[in-house]
Length: 183
Image 1 (cartoon, one colour):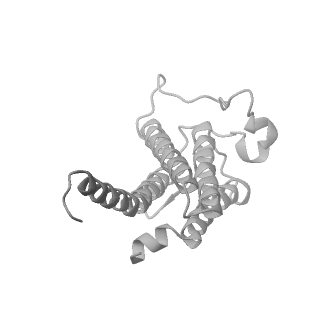
Image 2 (cartoon, helix red, strand yellow):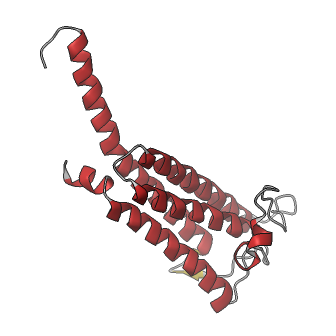
């Protein structure tokens, strides 16, 4: 295995994914409880997306060289894509406030998974989506989350690349067996 392929199929790679997501969750709680910045419902949904990435990292670390990594990779891609979509939508709400474009006050989690009731300290929104309360280097928190979710998607594509190459290599070798040509 080459360096990238070897790393993509290793436990440390999945641990790194989980650790970065855990760091983002810890940062969100620090902003909420340390700096007293109230999260809006879109921020809470982004926390759920980051939690999905964290779970993907833990799931992938269980058996990084088996088919389980594909399920973890799918969870990673879906969570990062959803999170990016939420961050883009929230940025539009904050930069172009309109009385017709608002977000809910309460999260809309499924009845079978009321996260706001189970863990209100983490998943209960107490702020408004239109509030832009923090920035660093001229970028709002929402813009930083767009960057973070984009990096997660880029990293997922990099992880997926060796898998696709390996699959194409195997498929092309198998095809040569059927048409009678030598390997």
